[in-house]
Length: 203
Image (cartoon, rainbow, N blue to C red):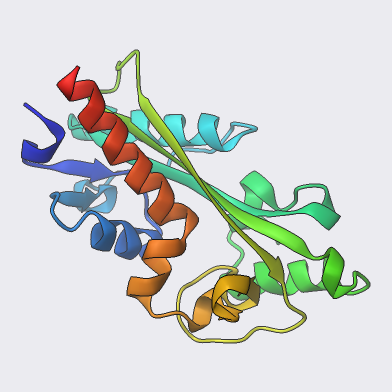
């Protein structure tokens, strides 16, 4: 059975924003969030995006007994030595809201001039055929930009309102979803992932 003919693929995420984006990008595939199987998020104990994505994919595949896709992503800011990085979703603490995380980021950057606010979103995507898959497919996407002083825009989620996209002269939160998905780290990673899976199947 090939990736394109799988009856169901579990998505190892409980984040509504991620689920919506991934289902939209992979619209031709039967992507079902792990919440549909009452699977709770695994503890993200890895120190890298790759480690955490593998942990999440393996957990979902194990409990759902289905092929799984997992995303681990975050914002990397040069002036903060790579923070928030792998703890982007909990930068302001466990259970922090998007607004809490965004406010902490702006506070940490309050004395940093605009030209030094270089940042990028990074996404690692992992596909595992089963929980014991010894060779998961791994892909990465990187979206370059910089951080503004204030939030602008109502679309997206997370740090989107302060992430300036130079090519479009607006924040990620001002982009229509369809446009964002063609540019974003997540869209890039999913494109690479599907290409790698198809190449492996054709080999």
